[in-house]
Picture: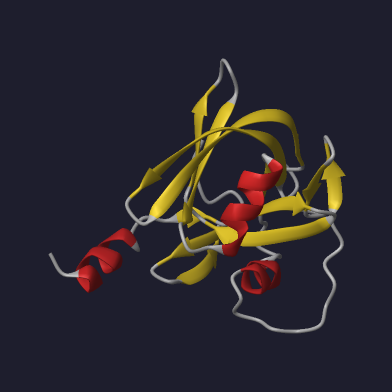
Length: 160
């Protein structure tokens, strides 16, 4: 199976855009990610998938904490910054949720303690136990990633 075809077909699955953040030795780190899912209600667990070569992975292993921040359609620049697509000297100001760094004005902020990890292929699945959650989901629309580009959902686009 050709890698290019595999990647192209996987790109046909629309996903939300998140930034995973952690703190290690007094410094905040973040990375754009779209491989996220809710796993369990009792206990409250979520999963993210991070490339084994990503710098943030070791930082999460050392700190045992991370947050997942759902980006709104107005936060594409943050996605680009944390995906290393934009290089500039801007300082990102983080907020805190249960003591864990989060991004201000994100649609949702999920604070997690690392529960377990699984190395699978060239990625590691991190299972996080949710310690707190905050969201202003009624006021914003999500940033969507589809076929390698950003998209936004229009308000009231779905029939009820």
